Length: 184
Image: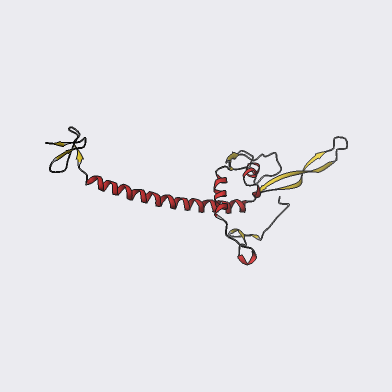
């Protein structure tokens, strides 16, 4: 039972959930700073993933499941420590408790935490972009190192090889000892 709907121009269509993101609906549009991207990248390493089951005794169930299905995700409480801006809370009148003397039942306020999935999605987009930059830099570094290695290997191929038995190098003519002095 849905009793509250908050919307930032989100629509359900036969193709799924869609949100308006046209820049004509936005103002003060700015690029995210590299420092912000780096900060998001660093924070994501600290998000603890959990496995869990929904408590069927709580009033909120996302389906008719009996609470046995294991899910992968995170808790709003854990995320709030790392991305406080991605967690909001709502106080709702959800739990009914009776007065012991009169038996009257009144809704009791209960705070529930919610994750702003859009914030997390776009933070993940920044993390992926940061990973792409780092991967490209590493690929360039590997290519440079491979070229250096190939150059060293070519130089070594042209260098006289050492005779393991005598310690002398052969260059096709006279023998030169790598330990010093000429060999006959």
